[in-house]
Length: 200
Image 1 (cartoon, one colour):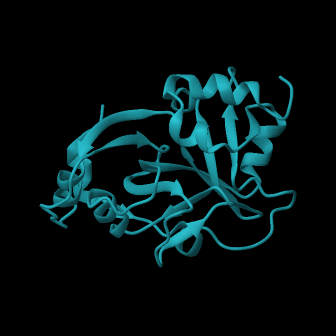
Image 2: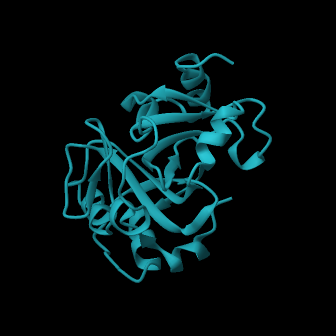
């Protein structure tokens, strides 16, 4: 269950510049693709998880789970609990568990029609903005067409994800804005599995 006490630690993270070093992956980068948990993955934190890969190189990988919703919060409350009151912010935002790493950190995945200084383009369809400005903009109807807000991320060290994929813990699928933002969350895993690029 989503706990509002976590909001006191709200920090939006500039992933590409602060947490993940640049450098080519040993093989093709998975950034921009969907990582789909195999039915046999074993880790309950990733049961039927579908992860949008934000960064992947030889030093490691980082992604956001897009189909584990945990609640809904008013935007004004999110900002106020973060120490950044905006009483004019309107509407609610659905909150997701993006992964088990640093669950106090917030991430906004969104369509590429929106760009701020802190925006990182994941691919031609999807971007991530790592400042509170995007929440203000969403609350004032100036944000991206589509967005997804998550606390926490899924991360792997050098070679870790590749080893997990070699033992068939994960499959990949091309990203699709419908899967990322639109489809009913309880259908995303089934849809992504149907589009996987490797057989079980």
